[in-house]
Image 1 (cartoon, rainbow, N blue to C red):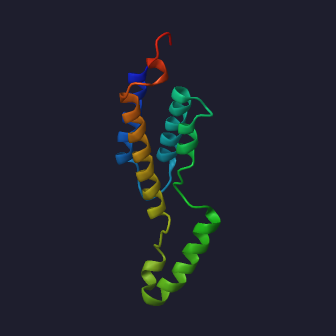
Image 2: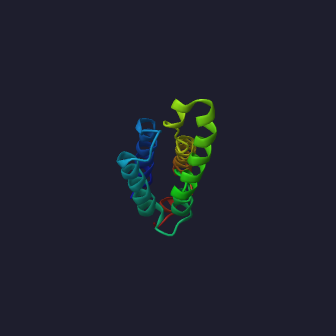
Image 3: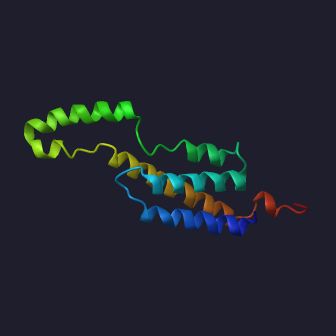
Length: 125
């Protein structure tokens, strides 16, 4: 894949972040994540630093941690505002933070693709 094509595709994927539902990890998010991961593998290689860094971004907490936190917070909130306890979602902030990290990561890779020194920039490659 050419450097400019990779950059354009990364920019498009980064721009899609604004359209994703930031309140839950649903099918649109999973499809977006799969496309980003596949593109990074194609551009940099499956074992690359870029793939490793992106796949280490956490967009949701483990089910057990979310359940424990939700139950603990629900007990506290129920005593103060019972109707809020039923709607309590502790993972929203976790997802938004992960999406923010992904935006920063993709922006860094886009900037890097605009710079000389990409493997395809070397003579003979």
